[in-house]
Image (cartoon, rainbow, N blue to C red; front, top):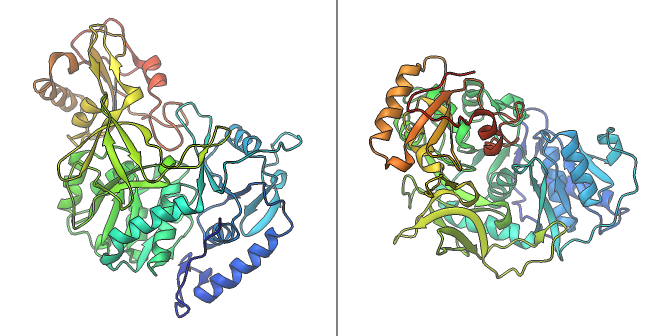
Length: 479
């Protein structure tokens, strides 16, 4: 299945890196035709890789494969050689789009072992395979059809079209499905301009290093009206920007997703005049499932489901979603599109249709007293102080809970954290209180093995490094 965006022929600028690479509707159509012709000699059943820094060329290659109905595999630039090796072997790809050129996979990744590509059977109509790094580090491929992707695009366009957004600035890697779908396809469908400068110019390096000042300056430079952020990026921005910061003046809509956003961060965003709206999604649902909007916003929720999507809460509290199913996991049996998807997230759904996330099902801790606790509950409360950049609660199989806390900056003192934990414990039941904690200024990163490449904490690794069995109700010192 293929798809072609209907672009206004009069649009003189729709796609730009902010410098020399600029495309209007006619130039986009011409370049897509050239790239599509390059695909003609390739076996139609073999997936094609796509890698590179944010640029118009990345998007044009993606659009060419979408229009030609060819299976695209966006490859995150922050993947390790081991992860790329797994991804290439799992998909059987032999060629890769890189900076507008179609190259043999070995020319782009010279470290790949010499081997004969294996034939891979994909679910019917698979047009894109999106890989996530996963908590174990082994990428897992989710197969999506063009129709599933466009259903998400149309749902987002329906709830955001009235905002009149004319300029979107991409701050996340284009290989991230959220930016690919919501940050490129949606603006193009709505006739907005997409600005895609290299990530270093907008403040992001690697998968988790972020310069908030540089990002704020880029927002001002491109007069961005919409952006998409991860919670960690938003947190850095709101504590860097000033109240009524002129660099934020053009923003109409700031979407944040990919993790829990502390209420203190949302409150600070409102204080500085930043129009932030939380959303929720997963790759299996072709990205966005639910979203707050100016016409329907419940702070602390992840909004209402998009048109065509239904959510429900199972008996054990798990969120299940229907209406945006994926084709299947790479290498797994095909899923019926109409089936309910178990998200793995725990949550609630109120009478007004607002969805709230309370934790991850697999993260639930069971204490030695048999009490079940979602660590995200005390973690969220710990983060409300605004003093912390990260917080992870551990204690599976232990009598009490412990916490590893990453201070926001060097101005955060141990005595202030101690007071925060003490006050928090006064409002928690005894089984959920933090009996022991430590400050860890290094933070959880992919470099030290304590987070995935996309910033999710590796809880098992953190527990192994920090868990103290002899729990005492006092702080432990950083090692």
